[in-house]
Every structure is written in structure tokens, then in C-alpha cells.
Image 1: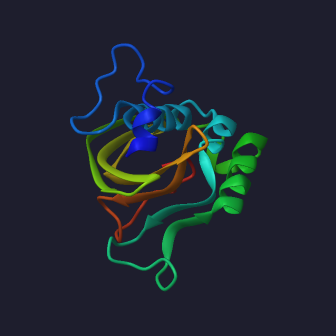
Image 2: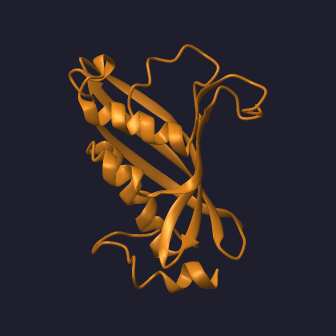
Length: 174
């Protein structure tokens, strides 16, 4: 984790932020920033966190293979860019008016690591208000890569608690 650890000073957690035990503060800060940018509809800044070969996946079942089974979302980098362009256009009927979001992320833990990539998993709850309050819950898995002194999101997998069952429209960044 030498490359990722060296980023700690450059991407230190905000004052008052408490990183999860065993998770590098720079990684925790990156994850919390990603969530905040999505919640605040700062889509272009959120998109800039993703690496060129990134995958964004919301499976219908944790054991599914996205190349064989249907997924709620299975985006490559080009599709992420397209999704952000739609959200930024303001012409997305499913987000008129836009959802108000706040998410909590907890129980962060490092689950895999190599020279330049660390996989961190954690639980989440998202509160979405758009006409009614909807609660989304599940587990995130982030593959975060050190690239030229920066951290980049190589992959994000979202395992919803209610995956496989009826799911309200996901017209926001989960």
C-alpha cells in the first residue's frame, strides 16, 4: 500500500472526519467525497473521480455475473459519461424535480489490496426525498486505484438489500 499510503498527506480527511479503523484516511476521505458529490448533484466533479476503465455495477443478486445476468446498472466509463451528461442537461424527466439525497456510509473495511489498488467495502443507507421519502440500503464495494499521485475509482459495486425484489426507479447516482 505504499503508493496509497503516500497519498495520505495529499488527500487527508477533512477536519473532524473520523476514518474507519484499518482504512487509510485518504481512502476514507475519497469515499466520503464521492458520496457527498453524488448527494449534492455535483455530477461533473463526481465523474472526474472515475478512472478510464471504470465499471459501475448494481447487480440484481450478489452472485450474478454482469456478462450473463441482467443488472440494474452495469456501466462502463463511456456510459458513466453519458449518464452524467443526461443528469447535467436538466432534461431528465425522472429527476424533475431532482431528488434530495443524503447517504451514510459505515463499517468501512479493506477487503483486498495490491500494489496500486485497494478494495474497500462498507454499508450504506441513502435517504432520497422526491415527493416521498425512500430509503435505500446495502453494501458498497469500491476498487480505488492510485494514479499519478491521485486516487481514482476503478470500480464501484452496489449490493442493494432489496435486490431481486421490486425496486423503485433509480434515477439518481446510487
